[in-house]
Image 1: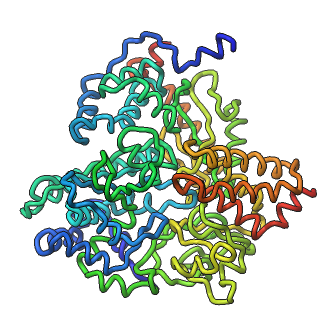
Image 2: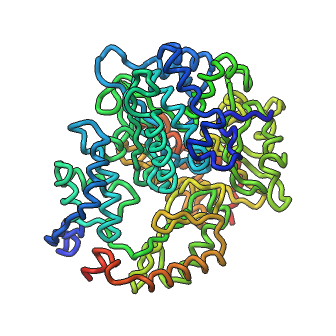
Image 3: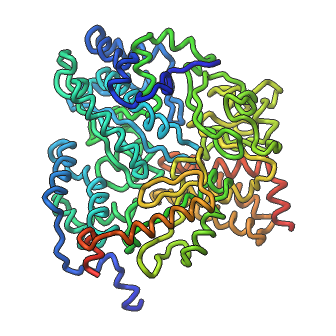
Length: 193
Length: 428
């Protein structure tokens, strides 16, 4: 096994200084209070959502260790959960994660065409991120909105009854939105890079 | 057969808010249950109603409630399963987006009946908008004294919280959901012990689907007897059916159980017929896990009786000629649909969603996907068809949770009814 294979990205600790802002901590503590004393581990999934949103769009070992500390659980308990659920990204992702539903009902309503069109439009394959780090494209399983197929979500915002024209509009809107962003609004990850 | 229980008043503007919901008769059941009924009386009304679990299994709700361990002295929990992930099913999302207080009302009655002082609503992580709406509804209810300490002066306390999932179909299985709620991977637990004895945090717990709980307010208000008169036979009440696929009017419909399938597909009140005037080919009537049926068997049973939208009628003929009502995820296929491609698609889904705990499911779903992939891509061999039947047979019944069954049934049914399509895929 080469060194590269052995050093899985999950286990590379960068020693980053990670902390939620006081406002986010308030939210975190409120979530923890929803569960009985001693069962604070229940807050793990909600906290990982917050961490992913607040700290740059994906999780890394430093972030996961930080969350483990907040809940007073071992890091491995966080890793095993973060790698189980498909909404958590261990690989870095673009600012907008486009997830197109590819399951049965969406498939018979044209999901494959939507995916092919997005691949061509963004010049990336499913699973990749554009060079400018703006878009990541993923094909995912059932999003639970089969009645308005084909469906995709962009960072958990649903877009339904898709067609090629709608995709053009969504991408154009996201592109113009990203240009408007002021430096102080940049996320943690963007600031690092 | 027009009958609205869950979606009653849904067309009223602003019904999402507590104020409008209450103005239209909402939350009356809380007053009645908490002040004039004992918890056991509420359980008995639900038993009398004949209400069955709306998540897919169809287990009698009142009976499930009566199993809860009241002797252990441990706190009891009510958990609402809002992890709606079964392909073809989107009814709970519709209900929660439009009339979230229906669920909150039902949960207060249910939690009171079970003697639970804490309840959780587990919602799949992708439904961020739904989570926002639910949190808003809960906030309103707390403010109005319908949640929290001493609800409406009755002396009964209940805390209700929304818990977010993170994209795992398996968490719709009740014990996997509890694991996930405890902050773990969604690996289903061995049963027994059932959640009613050892559930959340090892305490007695009842897990019910969103739609199931949304019925409770009506049952408390009108009595179990009145509910049991709606529907047909042992399929009492109404059911939300989410219709999708190649039809003119995809959407969520509340039907009285017993409606003929033919009427549901062709009436303009419901699906409005097959899109583009095409011929109907097949239907999956209860979410992707249940067997697909060709046109002749979905419209009529093997005996030639009209097929009805009910637990009994849809399963008549067993898996040889029947299917299941399941979650009510009604997927319609027109004459151009490719059954092989569709079966491959679902097998990829189940492979992706298998938690990996049991070997038959972990390995079997992977094998079914690969074999179907090669058939779909013109590289299949004739013996692959029987190989698929054999793999499906070896998964079914050999796993901790029903995901194994759910993965094998669609494959077995597609080959049972459309073997010729698999053969022609391989020949060409």
